[in-house]
Image (cartoon, rainbow, N blue to C red; front, side):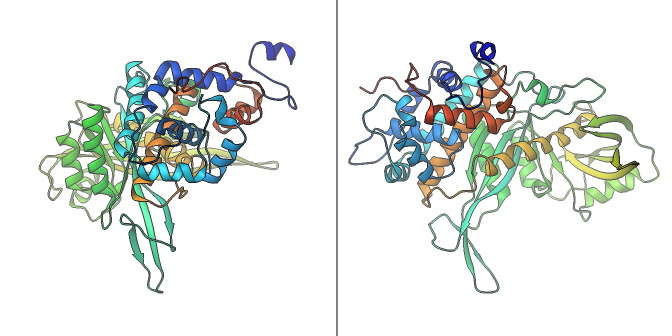
Length: 452
């Protein structure tokens, strides 16, 4: 174990953690992204300033990046001296100061910190090579941030139930990189092996009162294109987004769409079913997804014009997925099979992407569903109400997205070898928290070194 310690890879259980990993994290944030300089751009409307905004922003961003579960937990970390190692300032914010600043902060300046991190990552070619056959995808999905029956703000969505209960809900739309690539006989490496492209969050857009998820997603796409330009090639979404206005918006922005189809009442779905009836599949192949062997049969129906309200032809790809796997129960061996149907509509033409490529783009969204959107809620606590204020929530969502991206980029670009208790992303976050809270001595560098 001593040899492993000298290499900076392992440390024996029971020994007080060093600062190796957290020093690596701070150096990466400070040198690669100049995070301290961008934090100084945070603005707020406070009249009495006892703690500078960039100090509060640093505490919130790093705390959310390390998966703080509440403002109370952040205050405990501050009182334990964790952020003394990051910020060279005599005063640090407690819970009330954090909330007051978030409610008075400028939302645009908070998103500017997030956008600066992504701009640097793109400049460093972080996302190169992480595509599905050359197509860079971003998945859209709605999520409930939190709900309460106690109080309401001006941006709450009000749900009135038949039993008389009234709930006040905040929902958001999240845009996240499609980075999962399943391995198969074609030799496409899995994200778990290479992990070159982290599943970064491009934006979080709140739904306004009486507004649907698709309307908020269209506004989010316009904002992302205005800020980042051509940030992706394909937008991947579930069946809720199978609407003509959404597809028009995507094409107007110069992007393509791959949207799941589930409603058999759509005329385009019925037409595609009629075209493939009695027809042999256009393409078939066998691949592996995890422990399953999957035989896929594809029917490709391009240039359909029966989608009401859609001004351009649409293409429908219908897939039958026959899964095979083996189960062992005692001395018995069971060979199991299951059939799944997947049907998607896309604006990609057959000349641009084959049916198999469209199927793989649609399948890739499941990696984001399981490892992206789910992690944001359960690991980074997107569904926790840190505070109930229209401005404060948006500021915290911006810093949460920035902290999440910083953590994911750190995992992908800086960590080469992991100790036995760092095999999961949660283990790395726990290691960073432990080094901040109980690690002895100074780091030797500050995330925000100069406070003059």
